[in-house]
Image 1 (cartoon, rainbow, N blue to C red):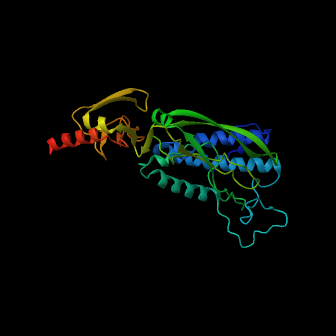
Image 2 (tube, rainbow, N blue to C red; image 1 turned 180 degrees about the vertical axis):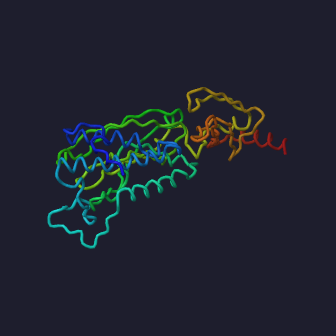
Image 3 (cartoon, one colour; image 1 turned 60 degrees about the horizontal axis):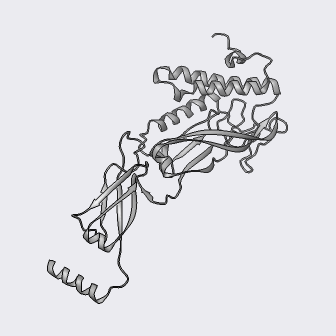
Length: 324
């Protein structure tokens, strides 16, 4: 059996590194070697490196701080309990880090093999440790529930796609103390995303000693539009038309969601109550099918006169009798 690799060598840092440098090296390496980012041919190597990096990270901080990386978590309070002093491992089953990591990879592989037909399954992830697992020192890494926030977008932004930068404060642990830190994240909103689409930033929530940081989930919310309403991938626009135009013909112009002007003419058509004009391919883009769009549905509200003179009534009555 070969000589075990030095954990500083695994993390590629000098032996006099500070805890902050160790953490930076760890975050960079887990992002590079995460198995989900590697093809099947190199997945076994990536899994092995990922496990070695996690173990090296824990051992390096243990050597510097003289205590386990994470204390036992108290599930009743959600905070970190005390480890070592006054504690007992009697009756506790310790799960090896490598076994739990491997099981975690198998579960994640099963999730990623599922077909993704719904754009609400979209996830962005920031580099951070994965969800809770047991360490080889008998302690646990717990993860609080994710924090959910809204990301409001206009229909124009969801039609064309855009980039948004968000700013927020969170609590982080630095040298055992909790401080407030301002963070920023960039989100690329893709054309066709719908209300409810989720973007997940892993490990970007508040930090607590003894636990992993929570995830932050941004959920797309659609701002109300003055002219269009979105239904699935279709856009619906309501137009008010006077009764005389509905019966005798009408031409009008309007702007599409992309800003282009369109003109419609109704000369041989009667616009009756419940009438709907469908313009194919002028709706919202389909997020998972490039080049395809929904339809634009124009629904008409006929504006009837509130009163008619005797002459007008007689004229309308005679005109309609001739067609009957």
